[in-house]
Length: 519
Image (cartoon, rainbow, N blue to C red):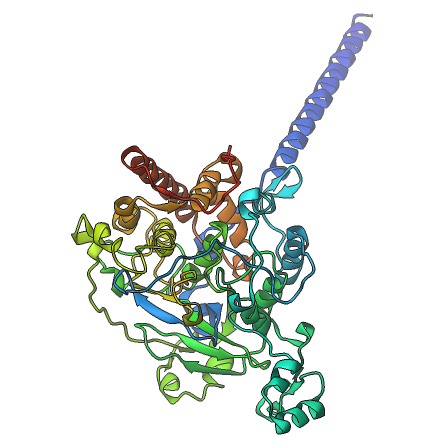
């Protein structure tokens, strides 16, 4: 009897142990399931700088920036020394090639589709960048452009016939509908037949025809997405070295007669410029040109030509097709696996800024044309704000389109030495604002908007850069560079507040009727 009771007690103990182990196992499985779920919900973090191609890789596959080139004449001016000016009108521009209204959301969707975008931070199911560009400050009303406010126009048949040439009239009749057929197909160019219909024009021609007196492009123009896609994907027909400058720049030709300026990758994107290096001896960075275009657009300036990143094969797309003997001699055939590489000498001409040496420099500037009237002075301040945000000290002149005289905007060209240092700000770049104490009201309002948590500049810039094809290789700006934008933006706003404390006439009011403050 005792032995039977012992066995029953042992059986109950065994069952209790099995039941306890089963409960423990179930608890562990539930814990693991919750842990895995939390991991899966964690945001994806972009790969660090180690994902950038190695130096050996970049010899054969080089990251470049493409900038749309313009055949239209432009004038170059030293920073404030050139005498010119008239009163400038308010910013205004319409899309050239369509009289239809294109919504921003349609243009953005088209851009995302063409360049493989669609990445970024979402606010209530929408991308933060889209919400920013729908803000009233990025959609201010503008007067209708007049005929002489366009840089280029397609001549109508009536205009050609008004010249009174019988031969030209007969030629027009033979061609029909103002067709301009290409006869250079045998040279590798596409056979094209352009007419007065904008749909027959390649993206680069549409872009040039859309340049107006007051802005380089309309942000809502759907052709911008086509142009950047074209720059990133078109077959390269020819490459020659561009003369002038201190570093290697290539002029690229495409089969549809378009051209672009190419700046090769020189250093890793997370590399920071040495503090002891004179800024004019610094490398020109391909990613700086790309980032400058995006920043200029976020500030609402629209004064930098479209720039896009692209991977190219240096051997087959440059060395083997160039007809430039000088360029071909710069290639070095490495004995290692990297293959040929390009290089170019660097010069360092000296230039002294009057802003830095004379604390009252702006007082004399304000007395001289074109800065004594119109908007040339606040145009200069816009450019100084842009340069300070991206740390660009290499701004010793500016350019405008000659056709428009002094009544036009400044082109923000050549930004390759920007984004060199993120750990240090260069206060001398902001001296024009601090001395002149003048700024566009629209510029200030957009800066304040970009300082708010919902539209923080670093977040908008991060999302905008994700839309470039090279973002798939590695982030175009490192996180420290993005955070430096917020820090520098705060410094600009402090400088404006200091001006307000000592001067009454700080703002150039270019937004009549807009009384809201960003909040």
